[in-house]
Image (cartoon, rainbow, N blue to C red; front, top):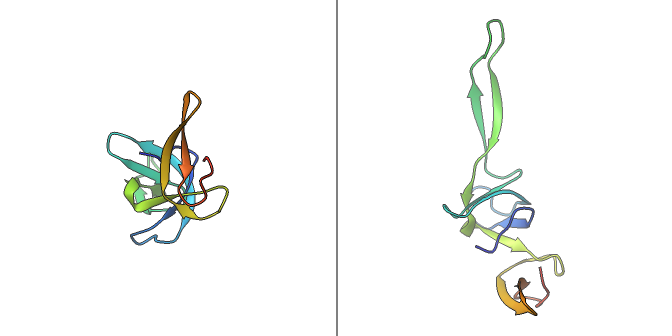
Length: 101
């Protein structure tokens, strides 16, 4: 998976199609990502102590990484990502403008 924590991605399918945001969490095992402001659900929580009211909390749920494209920092567009070796290091690069990400 080419998406890492802190990257900016654009959602390409689903109900949040077209939204962009920063990646909060990456699950490599399940190939899922969590993006801030995307795929938000409301969860009702019960009161913890007597006299306290229950509340509604907004929770960001993870979704498949295949539904998001990495935004290139150079060309500012969603693009496919490739890997190449520069020196002794593997780097990701934008397939549109060939710049390193």
